[in-house]
Image (cartoon, rainbow, N blue to C red):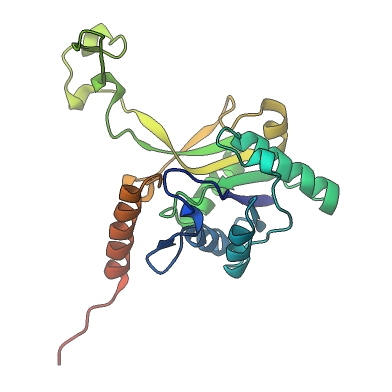
Length: 242
């Protein structure tokens, strides 16, 4: 099946200004996602959707297609990713007569995702004829352990807890997962019909926490650098003494 890898990056990021072109180690943040996508065996094309000329130029430098600039109306703080993906699909059909079977949304803020993750998600969709595959990781804090603070400053349970779990031990808590933002793979028909990345029947692709970091702050950048340095060091062969 034909799978389009669609990377989305706008110029007006707030938490970390210009974060999509900010250097992470030795390359722009968005380059990590472009490179992983280009190494994938399952993606038919790797395309960038952006409103920003500099981001477009950087994306082209690293090998992504940038056949259009996204309208400014689709690059606002409240612009939905569904609207951005729909615009790209409509542009491709109208201007290039292209109708990929699946669209994989890849956000540059997940630089630790690998080509193997991309291909594994595609394989899950192929083998199970899944309408969607979405990446998740184990929740860092189990929802049953979360609390809310009342107006008087006291703690209360965030939600109801089943009676058989009233004494919370980690060993008996049911597994809990959260979307990590690294991979959203959807059939074209589902995106146009359901207008959601998690339609009924969506399948979970589980990723480990060390590849699930979603960069939204300077601290996230720091953590990503530490992980990438460690990853690089583990691949460097040790010198043998004579």
